[in-house]
Amino acid sequence: MSGVDGPAERRPRERATTTSGQRKRDLILDASVRVFGTGGSAAVTHRAVADAAQVALGSTTYYFTDRDDLLLQTMEHAQAAESVRLAAIVEAVQGPVDVDRSVALLTQMFFDKTTADPLYDLALFEMFMEATRNVALRPQTQAWSAMIGGLVDRVLPPSDPALPREVVVQIIACLVDGLMLEAVANGELDVPDLSSRLRVAVDRLCPAGTAG
Image 1: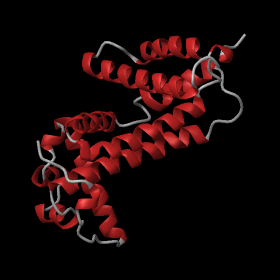
Image 2: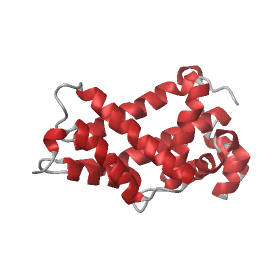
Image 3: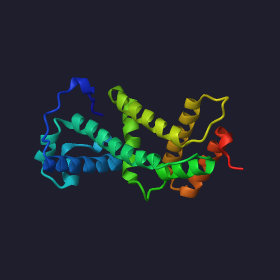
Image 4: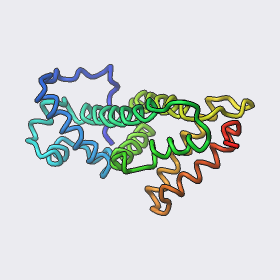
């Protein structure tokens, strides 16, 4: 495993800010997410990413100072893309949310792969695994967890007042992660299965939100 320096310890090369330069950089980062998702962090090298993006090797070394810079920016790129998608779903919510609607929204956000790229999910799982070995990456994963928690909080109905709200949110967010990983790893749970299991937890933790 490559040691990744903290962001404060690296001076990234100044990158092109032109529209074409930004497009090429995004193209490379999209390819890097695919490499990350299919092969894990060890697969993320300048050469592998250049091949996946179908660009010259010099393009990756121009935009990213070293492999660690490429790895960190890949994480940021994947998280930014997913945060935009998830926030759009949550921002569109109007009116009160009961258990049924909450489960439907969480399903759309996390389980329905017609609205998300599964490789981004795999890449994000790989990023969290990498952070278990490299503490320099933990601020990145902590920020992601906090962002997810905020979005989950907004689509959950009122929870049991006997339980701290932040605990309820964390339980639901962690259950979503666990169900997603179970589905990917075993290939035995489809979207209705995932939703039905999630509903049990939301129903128990948010009884005031049950319709009828």
